[in-house]
Each structure stands twice: as structure tokens, then as C-alpha cells.
Length: 54
Length: 191
Image 1: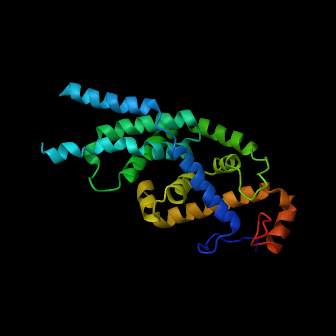
Image 2: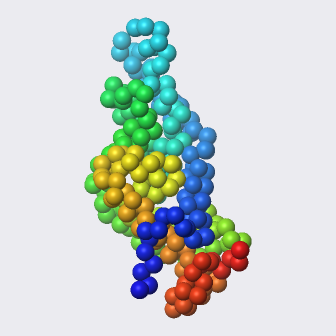
Image 3: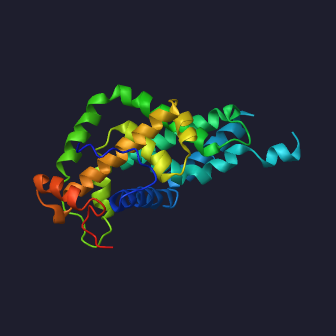
């Protein structure tokens, strides 16, 4: 009977709402970091390699 | 090659997805260096297999599929390492959250990384990056119902972990009572 059931999707408890908000915040914080140079370089290299092969 | 084809090389768009790929990769690996290595491998694969991307479809979903396939194939090679991380992270969960009604991000991260990987990815896709259940199911190659249940279980576990850490609720025994008395306000926040 302590099984609170996770199925009610509509009525979220304040804690559930905080969980969702935090999910988005943590994720966004990382997604919005500037793209590290290594990836910019990588894409350049891939492009250069391909141009070299042609 | 027409002008249009040369202008819309979909690979030019890859750079715009690196941020979200890093976020998704981190939610899978739980480790910065491993996440960036995973993104790197995935970008190379995406670049080389760009012809398998259908123009006009969701590029993020395509990239995430590549990323998670890469992750799981690497994971099979290093199963033990991952279990070690689980143990370490679970041990760090005892810190109290901030008292201002907003859980500290660190606290949240610590709780999140204790979840099983399939719940982390479901929550990252649906809860954090805004995939529909259908898109997430597609990306993970499972049924929609499976994604829903992973999201629900993951969210319920996070609520449980963070609830346990809330100072107002004290011991676990109290929590049960409090949960019943105070069901609408598990953090003790008076609205």
C-alpha cells in the first residue's frame, strides 16, 4: 500500500516537478557549454581528409 | 552537383549538435573524458556515414542513435569499470540538499548517476532533450511502453533519493509517516 504508483502523469508532486526541472537544467548546462576546440578541429580534419582524397 | 546540394551538405550542421551530444553522452558515461571521447567517435561515424542520414529527418535523433550504439558497443568491452563507478557514486549520496526549495544541481547529479543506464537515457531523451516518447523509443530501439516505464521508474527513483536526502524528513521511518501526512509536499515546502 506504500506503493505510491508512478502512473499518474498529470498530477506531479512538487518534488517530481523539481526532478524534471533539474533534469532540464543539468542537461542544458552542459549542452550550452561552448564547443571544445577538439571538435572544431576534428570536423576540419575530416573535411580536409575528404578533400585530399578527391 | 547543383548549387543546392553543395550548400546543404548535412555535415555542415553537425557542429550545431555537439552541445546536445555532449550532454547526452555525459548522461550515459557519467564521466567527462569518456563523454567527449564518445562524442568524438560518434562524430567520425556520423561524418563517414552521412549518406545514411535522410535529409529532412531529425538529425539530432539520428546522431543520438549513433552515439548510443557506440556507447553500448564500448560498454560491452568494459563492463567491470562501469560497475565500479556505480558503487562509488552510490556512496556519495548522503549530502543534504540546499534548503531553499531548489535542489542543488550537484545533489541532483549525484542522484541521477546512480540510476541504471536505460533509465538515464530515457530521462535524458524525454525529460531533458524533449524527445517524444515515440522518438525516444525509436532512438533506443524499444517499444514506446518500455520508454514510458523507464522514464517513470527513473523519475520515481530520483524523487525517492532526493526525498530521502531532505532534512525535514529525517529518518526513513519518519519519511513513511510524513509521506502520508504530507503527501502533497514531500520537501516540506509550504505553498
